[in-house]
Image (cartoon, rainbow, N blue to C red; front, side):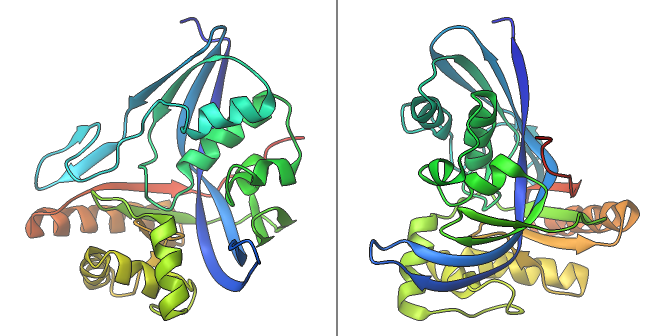
Length: 274
């Protein structure tokens, strides 16, 4: 399919997250600081009516490197529930889309939300309330950059850009956001350095997260941050050199422990041009 449009769909990191309440319809109210990074999916949009998903997530570690879906990870289906298909339906548009997945699914990095946001940008949709119908992260991914996000994700207050690099580690398993919020309603906020109210709930819903947190803290000498509801952990770094060194150290530690993960270093990127 000749691509008429090629779109980037950047991942997002949630640098801090507080659950501030719950609406009568069950949706949780948030106050979060989010930043877009240059780890990104790519969408090729042309004429037609179909969706093809190509898994290009890179995995590394003791079990060997490679591209594609690892044992235990979450596949990305190309059916009507895919957020790309839902975004097209919401925008009232039809297209043939090839989605090249480089952001792991179930990772807390907003990959599906960013894919949907890329489709909405292509379709000329700028209404954040409309975007929020697809998920709490979609409005931020529609705008990009860095912002404080409140409500159920539909209210954005832009922040100045950051000159910051990150190391992101995604274990070969996903975490259900719905399951994490279900546990949160039982156990409340807690865990880690207090920057993410969902950390205790996520580690309770998926105990393997705690083992990864301990491994990463042992390598870095400081605690990693949980990305959203998980399963990714990340470290803010002062620059590219620090990030590259930490990424390599983590890669060696994973190999020694017999672990495998999607491991990347990335940088903050600015908002989309109006």
